Length: 454
Ligand code: HEM
Image (cartoon, rainbow, N blue to C red):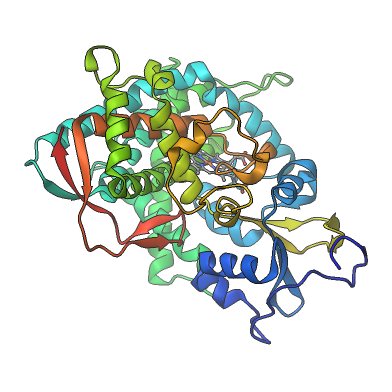
C-alpha cells in the first residue's frame, strides 16, 4: 500500500508494456496520450517499464514535482537521451551542462536576464512585433495565413535581434538556414534513439555537420568581431561578453560563449513561437475573450502600439498567455535520472532510474483546476490563488528553471497585444489541429486564420 512500507522491493503500480521493449515505443509514438493513460489508470505516482530492468517513475503530484526540481534537486541529472542531441548543437551550454560548469555559467548569464536588461530587449521585441503587424496589414482584409509560420518567423527574428542584433528569419542569412537544419537534426535525434551514431557519414549526419560548422564559424566570428570592437552593446551577447565572475574576475571563453549563444537560440526561439501559436488557436475559439483583450490594448494611452512599459496595464493579455502555457505547455514534461536512491510516497526510487515531471497532466488535474480543459484566462486574475506551487510550472522550477522566463512572458504579451490591437483573428473552420510532440509542443500541421482589420 502506498505510504506504508519503504522497502526497495515494494514498487508503485504502472504499465509494463511489451516483454522486450516495455513501454518505450508507446512513449515515443504518443507521449501525451501515454502520460494521460498512465495517470488515469495508475494514479499520481506510477512506475513505467521502459526496457527490461529499466524504469521511469512518472510523478504527477505538485509535492513530488517540487521534491525532484527543488528539495532534492542535487540527486537528479538530465539524462543522456535528452542532453546528447541538444549538446550536439549547443555543446556544453546552460541547458546541457552540469555541476560546477553549470553553476558558474548560470551566475555569469543571469545578469543578461535582469529586469533592466529585459526592458531594453523589450524595446526590440515591441518594434519587431509592430513591424510584423504592419507587414500583415498590407495584405487584403480577411487574408488567410498560417499564424504558426508567422509566429515562428517573428520569434526567430526577435531571438536573433535580441541575442546579437542579426535577422535570422531572413532567407538570405546563412546562419538562419544552418540553424534550421541543426534544429531539425535535434528533433530527429530526440525522437529516435536507434539512429546511426553521428560520426557515421550518413547523408543526414553530413548535412548536420555542415550546418553545425556554419553555426560555429558565424557565431565565433561574431564573438571575435565584438571583442575587437570593444564597445558594450545592449543585446544578450553584449551582456554575456561583459559578464565577470565575482570571485575570479574571469569572463567566458570564446568556446563557452558560442555554446551559450547557440543554447539560447535553441531554447528561446521555438518555445515562445509554439506557445503563441496555441494562443491564437485558443483565442480563435473564443472571440469574446479576444475582443476583451483588444479592448484592454486599445485602452492604452492614445491607443498607441503597446510598449514595454505597458505590461502592467495588460493583465488580461498576460492571463491569456499564462492560460495558454497551462493548457499547452511548450515543454510538456522533463526527464531526470536519479544519481542515488530517493524516497517518495513511501517507495524507494532506486539509483539510476528515470523520473519524469509532467506539466501536461498536472496542469489539467481537476484537483487544482476547475473545468481543467476549458480555456479560462480569468482564473489567473483571481487574487486568492490557493493552488499548490507546483500545480503550475510551465518554466520548470528550482535551480534549473528557465532563465528566459521573464523574457518569454514579455515577448508573448507584447506580440499578442500588438497583433490584437490591429486584427480580429478568426480560425479557418474545418481544420484538424493536434499537438505535435516532436520537440516543443506545437499545433500540427499549423493554424490557419483569417485576419480582419479592427
Ligand atoms: C514560453 C517559452 C518557454 C518555456 C515554456 C520554457 C520552458 C523551460 C523549461 C520547462 C525549462 C527547464 C527544463 C528542465 O528543467 O529540464 C527551461 C530551461 C531553460 N530555458 Fe526556457 N522556456 C521558454 C523560453 C525560453 C527563452 C525565451 C529562453 C532564452 C532566451 C530560454 C532559455 C532557457 C535556458 C537557457 C534553460 C536552461 C536553464 C538552466 O538549466 O540553467 N527559455 N525552459
